[in-house]
Length: 186
Image (cartoon, rainbow, N blue to C red):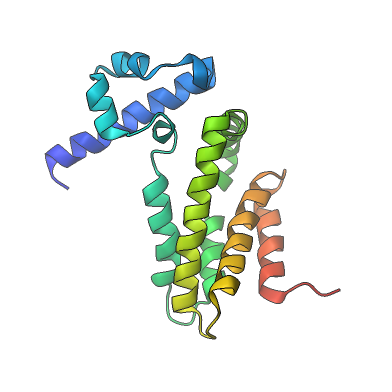
């Protein structure tokens, strides 16, 4: 990455961090893009060059997260199952580290209590679900139908979200992935 791209990346991260902090402190509706631009020392058009919508200020890593999710499947070591690769991907997630859980719960509260952000998050996760379903269909040893891939992708992503809502996210994630891997035995 060249110096110019590095500077753009740092500026983008700084703007997003600033905006997220302001949204948490004041409330999403109370913070304007003009205020964010002023505090970040950029013009409003520059702000919108980095972030096309106010919601994308909060979800600044959405493309990278999707790429990492797909890479967990496509770049897994030979002999590693898709579920094991995804389990490892989510287990190593920064959101699951104890020092980050408090920050994550504050961030999650912002999203859950802001209709614009929760709607955006749902659309983003639906896109991730479709991307994951597509790669599952291509990578699965035993060929699966589109509807099966979509359901499996949904369950995988939902397992991660459900685990994050518990007091023991890693244990919960392990339990849910075991259920995915072994199936439900009545």
